[in-house]
Image (cartoon, rainbow over all chains, first blue to last red; front, top):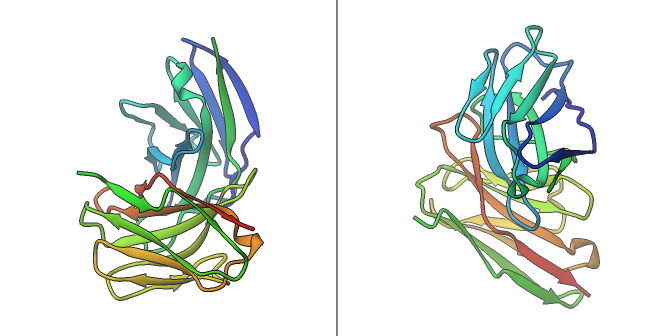
Length: 111
Length: 113
């Protein structure tokens, strides 16, 4: 699985868009980008995933660059409840193995 | 639909004691996982089970054993607890419907003295 690089921490004002970057320069053609988040003391929660095209769901949007070497998770209107550690994970879709969680980005939403 | 449940929520052990962490899911998922999370670190896989009756080692299996009792339940056993096993343990199950979406339990906080 490709390695990912994320900034260790970010702040965002409440109500503004939070843009969380992730670099995955060694990604291969069949690897997906997944985002999870972990709110303090809870189990991680799936947010979104994508392969090539940009994706949007009720929680967030995922923008993947054309060369697929980086991506950005966008929370359009951050709330205090979005304060969490966000993990960017790259791996081949469908398989029995685990997701490799790194240390992620700690997003703090400021009132 | 309770999702993934874990028991106990919190446990204190003395060095050398044994215990079993329980995990159950009611989503009919085939794959289940045990992770540990230490302060300031991401999750690390201990063991996983791709289907009922099969288990495989993950990144940090030493000191642990697992049992996939049936499709619903996947337990993690510490035979002789050590202080290095003080951690938060998360169980997860995976759906095959949406690629690698994993659903996590609330965690078990283990302190080994």
